[in-house]
Length: 466
Image 1 (cartoon, rainbow, N blue to C red):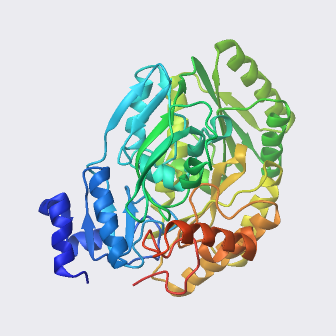
Image 2: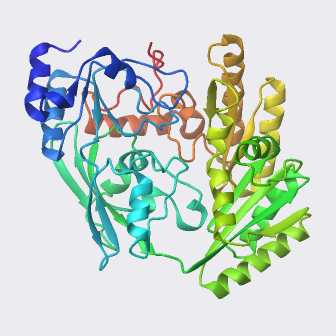
Image 3: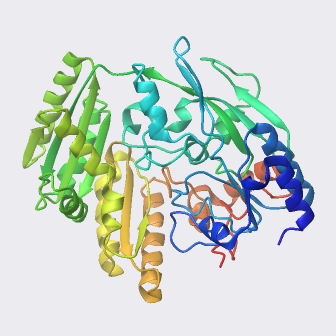
């Protein structure tokens, strides 16, 4: 428990209404979207601006109080669970779009802005912010930056880090720094902006971000290809790229996923197909039509059973909405859902899917696999019940083997969800002891008292909390 005098100091900084200590509030922020991890914080604080955050951080650093930044809690690696107690820091007051600069094609935002809201605001001006995680209806920009989130458009447009031009950051000692800016070029010193993107709140607190925008594409088309053989679907992905075509979206869903998604959405997805590819291209109309025709030709050459192009925007939206709903529809099956994101080179998508299916059979668990086939980012998802300890153990074993196989195939343990606490035991598979030691040295230089989101990224025995 925090000393009452310290709590009073926090109240003076942010106001009494913005300091929560009730058991109900503390319970609400004791977990995120990751099953199996929970720890009750000592206090929840909602500051109004960068200066208040700096004051809070100075107190935390002086008294070695753990501090966990939290957005909407959609994190899937236990990255926003306060495993060491202390403070959960909310950004509900820092939720403003500060400026849309059409001359420099940038938008300046606070971390509490909901991703979908930002996308809609800039699209109204004929501009595009491409990163579109499936959680974008509720996830926040601060969380996206901390996890370097991806999305369906990642193949063509890149991920969050490709759009972060500058940051305002409160360091663990309370210092406020600004990195980057509205610049196309900037090599003044180390690239601190890139360092903080994807740092999972372990190095400091992001309080403002300058993001890059691009012109809205003038035209788009969406198509669906179905396959009787997963290998053919995976070969299609590689063949499209080999033909120098980079679709805006190139998504994969296996049969178990299609069955669940169709049952919920009822849009006519073929549940008898072993795999489907959802493909979208955007750009100038003539280029899009040429690319879609060529993609359809490639799909047919590689034994697609059916190839169909959405007849209108409504049909296209239904398809992409159904893909985005994959997690929520699978979550209806059982009380607990584990969604992972092992990533492999595109050429290894088919072998990885086969391995996932083998592992599912080995451990007798149901795994639905979908994901961003165009960039090799697969989401093996297990509906289960965390209360069934024996089954839960088999699920953990299955995922451990999935991570091992992904690295063996030249991939990584996470493509967009982050390491957090859940994947910390597996980070060594990817980086080795030397790599982890380098990361720890960076952490120590910024945060010697280990107050910033402790228990994340680096494996500790007690990381699941209560």
